[in-house]
Length: 239
Image 1 (cartoon, rainbow, N blue to C red):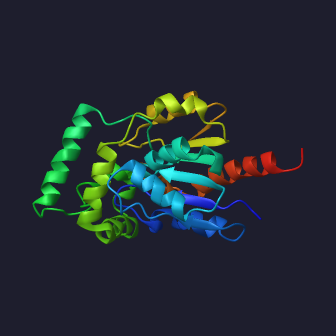
Image 2: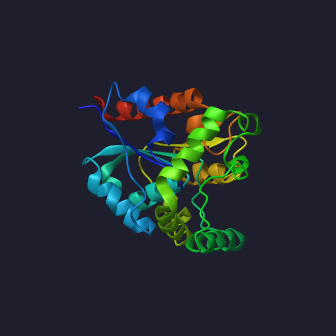
Image 3: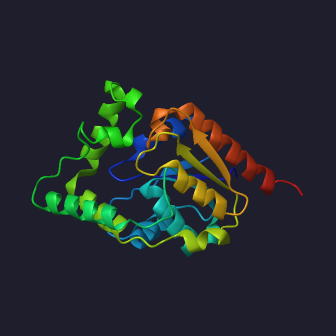
């Protein structure tokens, strides 16, 4: 049977983050998107994803999904045949990022949760895409579907995540690191850092893309993932 792929979404994102990838790869293999909305720790999110996953699979995570993917690599590396880390980081929050995140948690707890508003979109999307009503509407609709309570759990999980850099040299499966050239939230240098620490990792830079590369430049991302999945097929084939 062809290797399944498990996709992990980011903060305030759901399966629509991966629509183009699901469409591209579902014809030839089982694909699924994990829900990352029920636990308030990265460990809990990883355990929930593993509980619903097949025995062995390829794993792709974007942003918060990348944090959870790295936790899965700590907990069950033998189940992961290949790893794709998109627009994410292995670093924990800086003090400034932690303060900002705690402020958002406090606002949401007082009933001021607004999901992704137009003023937050510049952090997520390339400037050229801010006037695209279909794309911006999809991003805001995902946040609305996730909602306040899940947002609080997700932010708490992200705030408490560990530094994943010490474990990167122990990752032994074929890995690709993907980053939008104009990613403001997890800029290219942190992807370069991960690719440099993971043995044999490929780094793919997606041109003219911000943080949500799977939605902004789906064809380029799909090409990177197809090459990665091709490596898995090559390594699992006859020796």
